[in-house]
Every structure is written in C-alpha cells, then in structure tokens.
Length: 338
Image (cartoon, rainbow, N blue to C red; front, top):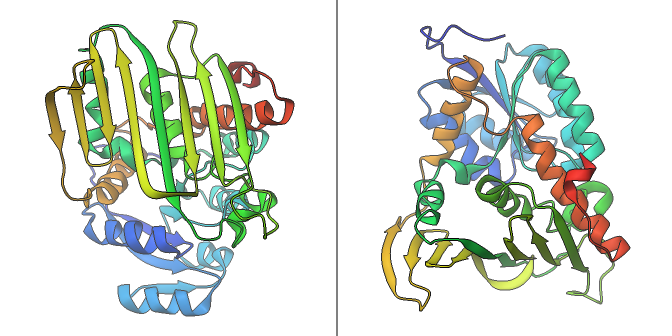
C-alpha cells in the first residue's frame, strides 16, 4: 500500500460530503496541492454535487459506493455527518482507499475501536483532520510552555453562537454522537492531548437549555474539569450558543503564562505583562494544502501519521469520559476506558 519515497507520485483523490468544511477548506486545498489531484466529488444532494463538479471540472456522484467502484482513487477526504462516517470508511477500506477523515474519528469509543481494526486489517492509512497541528501558532505552544516554570493551571474555551443548536443533525445525539464536546470540542481536546496528554480524572456538566422552546438532546454547552497526576489541572468551556466566537488556551506556571488564541500566542509574566508574542493576522490558508500534502507523505511512508486511528482512541476516551462523568455525576478516569 505504501509508495516508494522517491517516486513522488501524484495521488488521485475524491471528496465525499460537500458541506462548508469541504467547500471552504478541502477542495481549495486539493486544488493547491502539488501532490494530490482531485478527480471526483460526491454528495447526496444533487445540486451541491453538480455545483462542485462543474466548478472543479471533475466527475460527480450522489452515491459514494458508485464513486469508489467507478474511480481509481488513492485517497478520499470524508466530510459527512458523524453517523455516516463509519459506512464511508468501511467502503473505502474495502477498496483499499486511504482516508482523510473530518473530525471526529467516530461517534463512540467502541465504534472507534472497531474502525481502527478495519483500517489495520485493510492496510489503509486513516488520518483525522486536525488542522491546528499544521499552524505555527499552535506548534509554538510547547516551546513557550517550557519558559514558564512549573505549569499548574489550564484555562481553555471554544465558543461560538448558533442561533438554534437544535437545528439539523448536530442537535441529535443519535446522529452526531453528542453535541459540542464531540463536535467542535474535538479540536480543543486534541490540543490538550497534544500538549499535556490524557488526564487522569474528568468531571463534566452538560446543558441542553439554550433553546428551551426546542426539543434536542445534543449538548449546546459543556463545562469540563480535568486533572493530571503531576498536579496540573484545568477547565474547558465549550458552547455552540455563547458568542462572540472565541478560542483560547491559557497555561499558568510558576514563572509566567502562555496565552494561545486563534491568531496569536503570547508569553506573559504572572502579572500579565507581555514578554514575547507571535501573530498570524490572517487565517492559515495553506493549512488545508499542507495537511493534504502531509497525508501524501504518510501514505508514501516518509512521515508518521500524527492522527491515526490508534491515536484517536485517546480522543474518544476523553469524549466518552465527559459523557459518562455527566451521566453519573462522578469523576471518570479516561485511561481506564481504553
């Protein structure tokens, strides 16, 4: 399944699911890539499919099974509702097509284990899209964290405002696997795991009260507390109803603070004075293309898979611990769920 490193073969790619993430990020990223060629798109909505098919001058399908049967694909970018992801991954694996999967990896920890086995048995590479790992703002965090003495507190939040959190499949746990924790929260959970590892204890409170006039069961807001055996502890606030949009992590140490926001990272004194900072004023337009090109290198064996199925079992354990802690009103050790 792997290509020789020196071949630099251009891989043939398809995209399944043509929502905002695919249209804004993955399709332009594929166009910008010098290593991967977009040859087909698929969406169950014929109008959406035709629009992108015509725009990119590629083949179009409304059934991913037909696309996999008709096209000689090397990889597929999967951007579908969470409950559809499993069937697309299994079909791709059956055709030995590598998968770049929009988060989350799965809807439950058990499903994640099963899909990891599917990928291993078929020999395909699957990488979950975690774009922040390809942004220098986020990769600088670890270096600055080394400059603030002994860290003891993490304060993280990711919030935005959606007028009606009950609307669409994201408001239904049976389809989404949960609400803001497993969906938008997956990015912040990834950063926490990247920077600090899996915590030893998690408690959580979840809310479905943002729109009391609507019926939905996928949490619109979550407050998660977590702690590590080394004394580090923190909280994570997630919300699909709390505006304005914000994304930040503050790490407090004995000799300073690291404050990470979407376009800026700063190291400060404990009194709040800025010592150094790194800014990226614009969004990272190259992140999608970098991620696709990196996945090409994963497939050809020249780079490690940074977000493989086995790695995402920890993410899913964190998510599962949040839901179990909220349900039982108790502390949950996510390590014990693995």
